[in-house]
Length: 163
Image 1 (cartoon, one colour):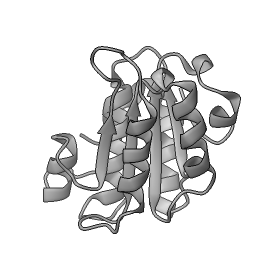
Image 2 (cartoon, rainbow, N blue to C red):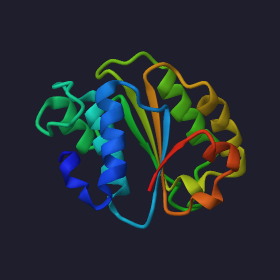
Image 3 (cartoon, rainbow, N blue to C red):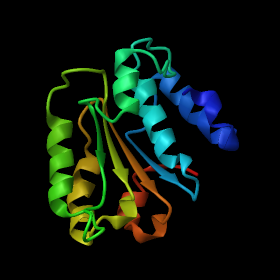
Image 4 (tube, rainbow, N blue to C red):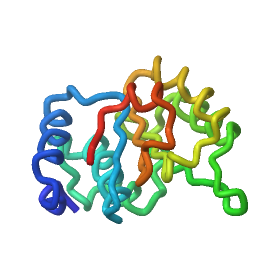
């Protein structure tokens, strides 16, 4: 997978690609919309940041890229709503925060991907806000949602939006 696979929203993707290539990307992105490609884009961003080629794109073949696309990379963590409650509870946010503050064992950047971020409970959003305001160095948060209006304004205001 590469940036060219996301031609539906080429202008936005080019913005993110240029930011990564220049080393000037934000610390949090809100990936919104109805497309099933939201999670694929989140993985692409994580892979581009950690690809062994280090050219701002994901080669898809190096060990790092393969692990990211298989959801097995230790520096790229996915967090989903709990199966029964369909909520992301405060304990999940604390696990995300703990993982982000640990020293990286592989890769250059830690990436926390919150799938269905609109499912964060109000308490979880409050807990996440502190980390979002002062993220650890070389850490990126990707909040994936089709319902961003369910997130608190304070969360939304700290994320760059990718539609």
